[in-house]
Image (cartoon, rainbow over all chains, first blue to last red):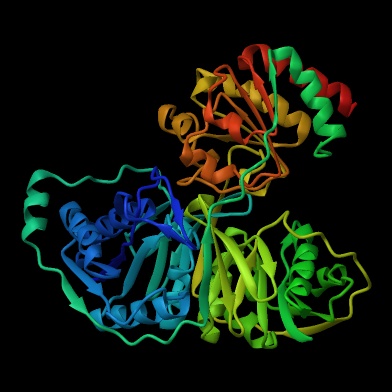
Length: 247
Length: 308
């Protein structure tokens, strides 16, 4: 029966306005949520458990503020919630984050790891495949569906279609929005999550070799040309060819 | 100059233009690139010669028939020299970048849109902010398309390396996508519709213009959430696809922050909306305040006349 881990990350709500203060973004006023694609990872992990048995542990990396997203995951239905953290960590690069998470996953004895295809803050999508490489596992990214009968088979986009891919051995699977509904927490789940204990573990992590120089607002665009009425589409088409040179 | 490694992006049996752009990115980093071409048939690498690149290595292996992250990373890592590794910021190559970085114990910086010495800038929060990081040594980076100029082609100096890796996943079958239409993530021109289109059937008016321009058709989250007929694969925005085409035409899209996050880096933006106060107009190079019903037929016939 598989020991399943699902990675969750605390990120600003995707509708939040991102403000820059000095040379860093100022996130003091944003609402924090589970990164949206992680919800598909949680759902897929729970379906895996329902089909094959075993247990689902939600794992995050972060300070105590991140407990909230673990409790949210618990309310949805995961069995255990674990946070890996060391107070000396700050502004970690991908190498240090993946090292710490890989160690925690090994310590948990996981056999399959689900995560969102990207986190809504960095949009990088590096964590899943990077962890798989460190663990020597297979990985499939951006899946839109999974079945668990007779081993793990996932659906992922390739070229001009969707491939059904069978996965042997231990694997890290990153999840895109799938063609299914994700379950939401119910009252009983929320009550259980309130009482749930987050187990906090530590890990070693190499120093970052990438340092943040600055975070800035995106450059403002100069004002464009604005027309009234549908007939102006002819002029706009001409400008797209003669001025913008894009058609 | 130190060496860097470009992992070539191919498209239907030849080099994708972004590969030539990666050469310019490598030179901007102060490095001389070696172009590594993962392939089944090394003949494809003959097209991978560029001005400014040192040489081309065709990494030939049966594992490259289908994308399998583990075997690709192992085979490429074994065949490629050390140095900064540069890939295109496509979903597959970003995935590969992360694996190669982890394999080499390096950090990975994704979606680079500007290079200044060893400082790399990428969008964060889906483009609502930009982050500049400094590399202190080798790293793996992915660079967005349409940012750097394409290096000129030249004769390729190709060496072939036989290399394969253990394939850990197996493609059972491929279900061809119903629509033959271009994916928004790969298109140079995108025309997207929002809830202002009124109904999913009206997206056919966008498809007609897309056919004239060779464009992809996209949609806002509001449209995808409202109509089952509009699939998530068309969604442009923070929880959909992030795009930076040469031209983005937004039709009946108000310009929610969620949508802007996915398309604001497009080179040129055209907005068509009947609401003169729609936020999308603040980001448009060319705005047309009108209904789509009166605008799209004029646009289509003007484009047809220009293209013929």
